[in-house]
Image: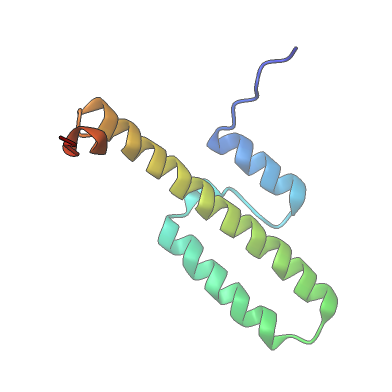
Length: 97
């Protein structure tokens, strides 16, 4: 049986490049920059009447949204781990008598 694959930021970059050749290294962008790019692409999506272009824009939008979701999940996990390591878990705050 093979070990589970570890996905690093570089792995996500290579996956994004395999999905769409115009998507570069997303780790170069901050979260707000990615959100801005996604909003800009959404505006362009609705401005065009070219269905092939809309498909390409939708693909890139999906890549940006997946990257943002991954970053948020990682941040939430780190925050949970930090709370657990500090002993500030919510279970310890609730006193049922």
